[in-house]
Length: 236
Image (cartoon, rainbow, N blue to C red; front, side):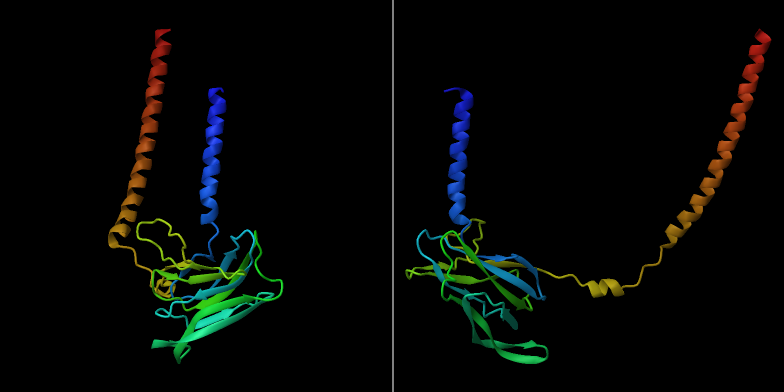
């Protein structure tokens, strides 16, 4: 076997091995988009793929953190699926639109009816509107995926500190700090510093002097040319 063919075979084996590793890792439950702004409202989509070869996904449960609760949670209907939002008592009430709330949604459950279950090789998406988003770096949504044979896959592993992906990662929504646009818009424009104004005046004078020097150089150049021409004529 030639060196070129051997290289091709090795490259193919490496590619196949890489895909084999990447396949299972890409099949977990995710939240999309995976970033949002603290203090705002957002719509997130929980994407649930079926990673089984012969059973269907019939139920999906997503837990919302109760220590950083959402005052507003609304669900988008999904054809063929029932949905239930369960609430839990809060240790500390939160305020929403001037009203004190003593409870918040802590879990959402979607259950398939009829032929709506997620079949092998398919995925389903579940939309949720959330807000206001808490002032924390991230929100972890622990999820449970139930199959038609009774198997429950628990996507509950939180992000690791060393950057490696856990075996059953939970969906994670990264939150970034918002910018104070109102303060920026209302801030008065700064007046130019006196040094800058003085620099503009000096610049004008420098320009005038530069023009005068340029004209003087032109006159001297013409005089020198004439003298050179006259000297050449006499020499002839």
